[in-house]
Length: 231
Image: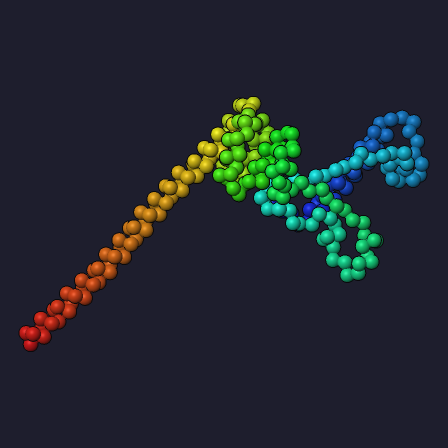
């Protein structure tokens, strides 16, 4: 998730149910292809033999957002129980959440795969100067696989040029980020200059108008005084 989802328990529950339903259908289709497979009345109605077992489905929620996960982590948290006694009759459903924004540096460093770099980028997405410094100190950023580079680009929500990624086996994400931040700075300076020029022109026009009005008033008053003297 790159954004917090407040109904995630229900969403995950739906995904899991669909997966289990798919397993049941797949098992029944496999029986249809076999010969001499006998079903009891109940098994035929269920499309599931009494001895069949499901493969467990584990759906992890990975929060790539810079915001800490403060959304519900269970179905019960989403339900307004008017009577607490009702809870024991409503099956709960909890979701496992990996929340990078809440992790400490020590916890992030425990990751052995490139998940470490993804987690670090998610953790410091709002602090680009700190992130680029950490990238420079970690040589793994200089040779990331293309898939991880794509994930990091989405986590950071940048406009890094990824057109040539497919032609490479590794990506120097540190250099990519340095070029991206440099582009932001240059763009900011250029925009600042343009705004300064526009403001200067507007101020010049306003000052010119004010000076024109002032001069006009002075000239008008001078003519009035001169006419009074002549009269």
